[in-house]
Amino acid sequence: MNISVRRSLVCVVIMLAGLSQALAMDTDGYASLAKEVVRGVMSKPVADIDGLIAKQEKLLQIGVTGCLDYAKEHPADSKFLQLVVDNAAAMQALTLEQIEDQWHDANFPISHGIDIDSYDHFGPVISLMDTVVHPATGIIALKEYKKTQNPELLTQVKEELSEVLEHIQHVN
Image (tube, rainbow, N blue to C red; front, side, top):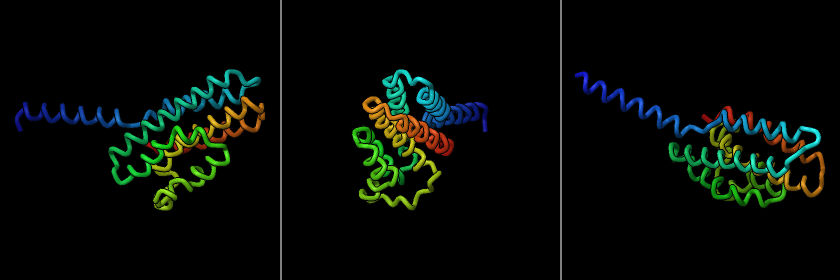
């Protein structure tokens, strides 16, 4: 193989490696932001609920992007992940009971023909779904907290993000 062909191949390999990194979800950034929210809800007194909601919205958006990127590379999982993406905004309008039933218990995906049992709970697809569902749940809880000042809702936000921090390790 001549030197020109080798150089071209090396360039292609470097470009593909960069593309692969570009498609990989920013799990470190996601985890860092999730930890910021946990610290915020556990601080006494809790300040800037709207700022914490905004951070949760950013987490949800990172999750949506991760779902879309993964679906491009794994077409067999695209129906499920597209369902998550298509419903990300609607999730935030649910009650805590509704999101628990529809997404945490997976009744919404099941009702749309997704064989949820075929996915590993700590595999990348369920973990990606959780990068959207858990922040959406946190948003609902924080909005409810603004109305009620019920400290159990802050604990729920912490638990939601603690769980997704476990899942985020299985995304890339």
